[in-house]
Length: 228
Image 1: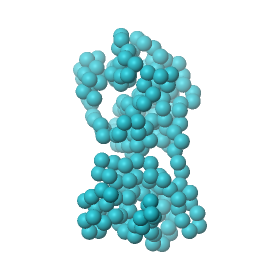
Image 2: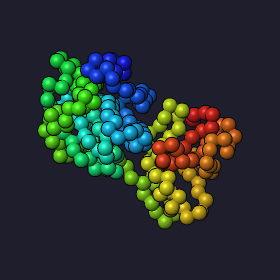
Image 3: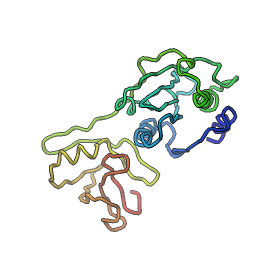
């Protein structure tokens, strides 16, 4: 948000800010976690990823900062970073408790402005993670659903949707390809049969349902030039 950018630039005018997305639906921690998991690897070493999807703001939920695979993560301890932590165990995680690095007055409803943005700014200025608070050995982990691979079928779940209406499943596409071993596949989604397994949206006529590998690396379902 613009106010959070203002807080960061007020502390570090030389900060370079990149918006990943403002289109995650409210309270959709899993969708945000999926987006972070798919995007963070494309940023250079030393990048500070500030993410706030925080339905527990103002409660007893913890706040964290972590060093992970040469980058930093800052946000609520609600599972938002758990897919990243699962793939790349963090070198260091702290609970944000040192109010010296927060804004003087902390709202019960806007920790993005009052806690996370100033912490990210101080990190960009060279403040050590150890200055921000004590070690946090066990961050919250999302109950990320795993697909079930059987002899004749795979049972998966839809974990997120994007603003186009495309549905993102929890089935990693490389694992699907390995399981198929060159066999053809059909899909059943809420009673609808999808026979089109394609590489691009343009492989089917407008209005057709399709399945393909999405940009997140998971099996994705879509309706070409539509949403239904």
